[in-house]
Length: 296
Image (tube, rainbow, N blue to C red):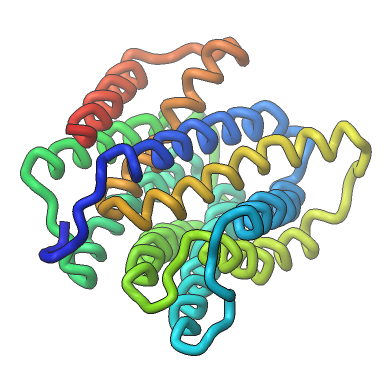
């Protein structure tokens, strides 16, 4: 924790962080199940729609100061900026997995919590105890292991354009989480207002990307459900991040929520009947141990 920061009960930020972990993991599981039927651009488009419903519902059902008020414009500006980076990260990520080897791209993208910790330490003066650093290392290491899969024989990437794209995704996600935490130090900070900023930033990035890339293809009720259900879960996860980041250290919140591949993997094993390797079991154990240590 940074010096002088307010001490809040653990459950205030740990509970929404774990809920976000669960929703992100299940949402990714459904995406994994239906990705063959729905193009990535469509998921982006419906993600913006889902987050708008969830975020605006949260905004109007919770007490909040006016969105645009003198003295609070800085918070709104940084809130929108944070989610511009978040949306850009998703776009870079989608482009990189199309152009490059998923085994490497996935590993690079899973490392963004480590970058968040560095940014939080340098720019926010956020400090953790040695036990917390150990816990975060276990979570990040487990996520890196889960994201790794041996390259299939004969698979080729189409050039090296995926390298800067994947690195940009990593940089944008780390920057986004750091700005979210910084914005809460500004006058007028409020979770409900940040939820609206999330929708604005998402609409200006993923929304435009989705309109350009996701309008083609089937638009049946089945396609809507297969797109909207997982994106609704992802929207709920994003809201959990907003609440958790307000009260908890971003150096812990980000790795915790970023460990959602554990939930996705369990879903894939139980529902999609995919095999879990010994390496993946070990990574799951490391992440669970890290989560337990974070809660001490």
